[in-house]
Image 1 (cartoon, rainbow, N blue to C red):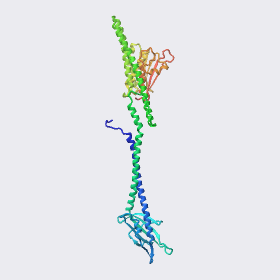
Image 2: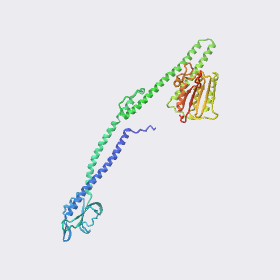
Image 3: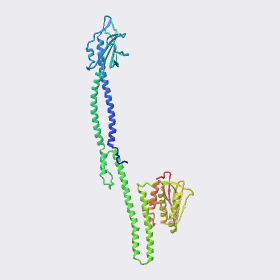
Image 4: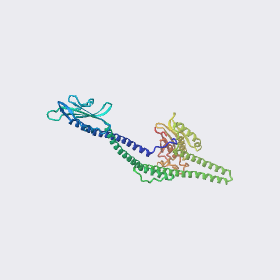
Length: 460
């Protein structure tokens, strides 16, 4: 991540999600207000156009066998609401013969009604035209005629602008009020999140106590999630403190024994006593070195930042190498150590050093707890590693407990109580199944068979 990268602001994101739709809605409302203003202006002026055509129609008479009209100026003045607005009219008889007015004023089809309106272009002018079909008044002669009245659109546009400006001012005032409410509402809605952030920032880093804050339901779920995380961290810290205390005790005891044995040997003048003391000290040193190695392995397994690279490994090679490494010490102790593997490779995707460490710990455990015969076995279908011995075994009730660090199955054993805990950690890292069972359940020495069985998903 670049050091100049700034994460997006939740406040800004909420404002965008709220204000952008409001802006789009406001734009649509402005368009609707303009269309409504224009429609209102058109309807108002169409009524004036209709009234003007009616006034003209009332002035039409028949004189000397022809249609005749004496048009008063007031009949057209009602349409000229603007000084620049122009008004035109024309009178035609039922045969389409021009009687009076502007002869070039176009005709439109009125259909079935008496009045029809249309927008036209005439002599480079945009006009609103109204055509009325009417008849002479009187019972003797009902001759039909047609009155055409048109005017330019300046008055309509002026009225449209006046109506639209009023609507626009009201919409702008409402929009400003809505924006203010949104800004205040978003800020108030995020206040609990700000309180949560301040509470977390103000906490002592060493404090893992749960958060006690009254929050809305959505943030209460986040608080509970944080409290669950803190609870898990408390358990981890407790386990780490217990592990450190046990490790310190386990290391302090053999080191104190080494110091005491060395001091005792220095007080002796007999070389044989020195030899015996050195032999005991060598055994204590070996035990301490093994304990330190196991502690490092367990720490390495439990390190969350450690991500060992896995690859395809041959389980047979790992088993043979583990037996070769332990063969010398087992031979000195009079232990029959052997290996049984298929004639071909058994490939498993795993971490090589972890599987080797697991076999080393299982062989060492069997040797330290009195086994005289140890067999390392590789199986397939399913792929598995097994270490079998003829020692005293582990009672069924103790088999889960021995997977804990520093828990010994037999108090008289020479082990540190870490071997099976390390194997269990390696099994978990590989999503493998770890089982402990007796070889001969009803015998005096039932033995122990520890099996590490892999699955198709056993990939770290």
